[in-house]
Image (cartoon, rainbow, N blue to C red; front, side):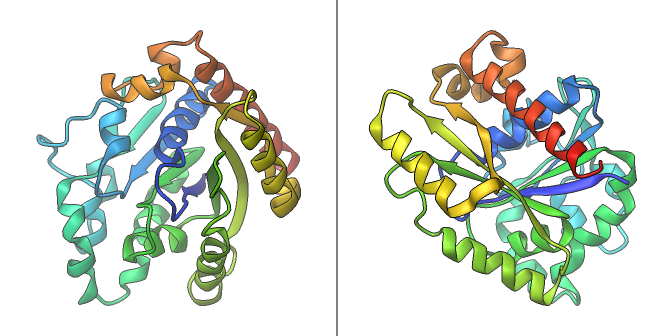
Amino acid sequence: MGKSIAIFNQKGGVGKTTTNINLAACLAMKKKKVLVLDIDPQGNTTSGLGIGKRDLEYTSYDILIEDDFDPYKAVYRTVVDGLDIIPASVDLSGAEIDLISIEGREKRLATALDIIQDSYDYIFVDCPPSLSLLTINALTAVDSVLIPIQCEFYALEGVSQLLSTIDLVKKNFNPDLQIQGVLLSMFDGRANLSIQVAEEVKNFFGDKLYSTVIPRNIRLAEAPSYGLPITSYDPKSKGAKAYMAFAEEFLKGEKKNGR
């Protein structure tokens, strides 16, 4: 059975979408069958994997709103072999209102993943950077949460709220929800602040913090505008090497846990 993981932080600009795209691509390169599911109305993961949003027949919106919808209809191939995507559309911006009147609205995504999960080794869900019905759907549907945290002064601001959200979902909708791990992004080893933040996060999360850190890297920032993961855009860059190292650490952790 495949494993589903939400990539989530209520704080924006922490490398959530970058991690979603590049971890998924690196795992696909390691011969894993991977699906990315984009439920962020901004659709940055969708465009970052080269999918044009205007001409899509079906998207994650249909999965959330349409009764008895076949999720396989919304699956598209990406430029990376072994990596598929269920893309976002602009319709997601109105999904909150559309979901309000639907019975079992918090579990619409979970129903879809139950159908599709066995077709993949890993499914990554890109969440909006906010607490919403879309986010609750994601956290209700997945096995675990991967939390990217930017190496900046306010890194831990909002983390307690994030953990409270996870606990709330565990209590009401998904008792088996776990924290997959915490990833430090936009790390600058020359800056004392980055080093201090890393120590602070390590003290807070302990062994849930990955040892791999993602550096600040201009090539990482450029890649989405070309609709490519960093491993396709510039495989020799520091960003590509960091995400490949992270994928290896991720898989080692999975093996250690019996997967």
